[in-house]
Image (tube, rainbow, N blue to C red):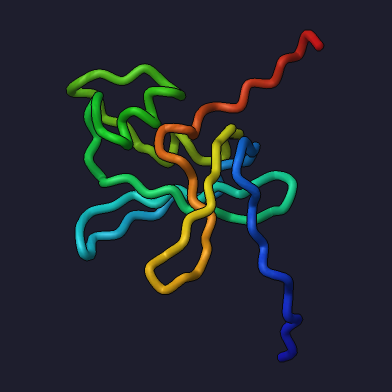
Amino acid sequence: MELEVKEKVMLEDGKHEGKIERIEYREEPFKYTDIYIKENKTGFELKFGCPTNLSVDSKLGKLISKFIEIKAGQKIDPEKVLKGKGVLFMTMQEESGDGKVYTRIVDGSVKPLVINENV
């Protein structure tokens, strides 16, 4: 099978629109929820991670509470709430320890995409 070599895709720092494509859970080295967002213009997929701890004040809880009201004692499936939703988010480029530059989603910046139908 032949594969085409593609240009490296980097998103510029700033606001972007996208869609939550999938959610994955991992157990090692600790419980984490990975939320994959595909940016609309480039199709570039970014991963936004949260500890798999759902409370009103946790990173995952704050994200979910932007889409639905949450309260203690409730049972919530993050996939049912988030998957397929349009979102706005901010990105920032950062340099890793080995000198590679990557694009990351700014914590707290993911929010529902609201389309103004009155325009």
